[in-house]
Amino acid sequence: MLTSEAGNEFSNNLFSDLAPILALFGERVTQQYLSHTSSIWECVIFACAPIGIITAVVAAIRVGGTGSLKAIIGRAREPKADVELELMSSTSLDVCELWSDGGVARLGGTLPNIVEILVRDRSSKRRCLELFTLESAIREGLYTCNSIEKQEPHLQQMEALSGNRADLEEIRTEVRMTPNLSFNLAGGTPSKGELIPIAVIGIVLQLGVIILAGSSAYSPGLRQKIADMDIPAYAFPMFAVGTLFICIGMFICAYVVDHSTEDLVWEPDTRFQLHKLLWLQKGSFVGDQEFRSYIISARADHIRRGEVLTSRRVQRRPDSTSGNLRALVSPPMLTVVGTCFSISGFISQFIGLRALH
Image (tube, rainbow, N blue to C red; front, side, top):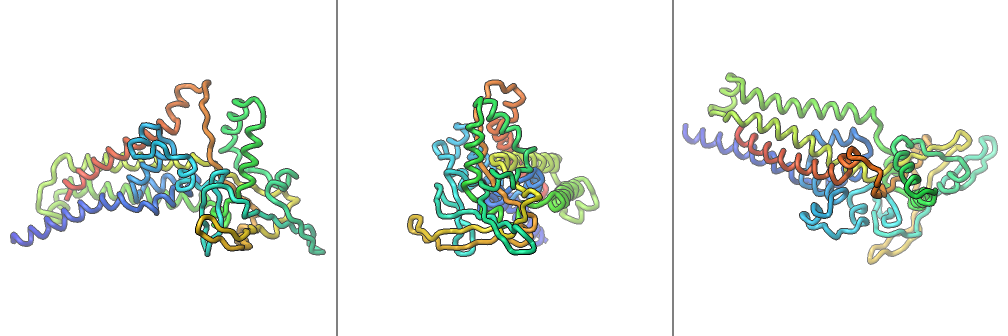
């Protein structure tokens, strides 16, 4: 009898202790997911099932944290280019993407080794093809940006601060000159029709875990079947509050990383019939790594839509006219709030789960 009770206690403690610790790991998976988030629904999905809590907190601090927070994690003097390279999907004057042996490699700096070519089918009767870069297609009015609802406030703010359109032209030039392979080769970002059902399932599963924990804590019959031991009164409240805090904190951290970049969807005019979307890469050496010459083509379904995706890093500037509300939702403030929720939630959930056995 004593041996059986000891075995039950060991197994209960083992699983209850390991479960929250496993959530601390998964650094690479977490970084990859956060770097490619492009909508609030992806943030909700991440909040419902976070793989690396500490990794997400550190990522949010690196992207939007204050200098004091960055100093705590040992990143006080980290350049923005390193953050963009590891945690963002954008390309810029500091980060570029090249094709390397079946995958996309992100590198620091801008290399004139790859060019994006749009092949236009001029006529259906007699094959006549024209070549454009995205910049020339935009200049001739053949491509327009239809994601203006997300970017317009930033562009208006930039124009109001500068008093002219010089900064806007700099942003547009930066977007055009650095092709984004990872987004375009993946076939675009997931649609709301795909993300919303997954987010709903995640929320239901998370609520189911809390309901199951509550049933085991307050249902006499179920408690007797699960384990013949008393559960402290504080166990379930701490577990439930901790789980809620973790979800809120992870959502805020993912939101901070997501809104550090702006994803633009360039769609063709009715006059433009996209035949091929190609990237021509010149062979070169970057350090000791060799990048061979390639002709890379987009997927057929992506070509049918005719979209070209770009992503750029948001350039935030101090706004003296901003009110208190804008300051409260600024990235540094959101990072502090998300960090506090995540850390306190993890501690509370760990204590509650340990007491629930």
